[in-house]
Figure 1: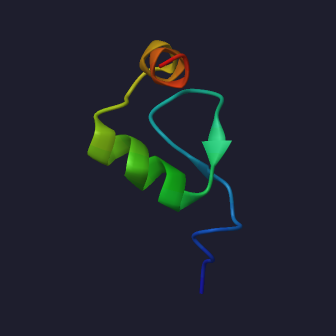
Figure 2 (figure 1 turned 90 degrees about the vertical axis):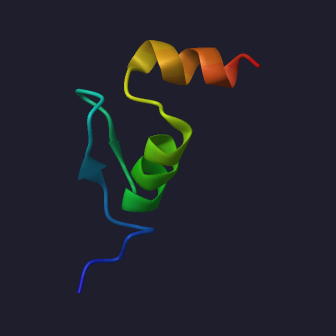
Length: 43
């Protein structure tokens, strides 16, 4: 059974592998690009 906290997954942001829970949070927040992610980090 996959571990959604430890295993790394490919998501919609090319070249970035993160836990599935992180991708799910990004999806909930509408983050789909690296630029959106960077903008969110600078807030």
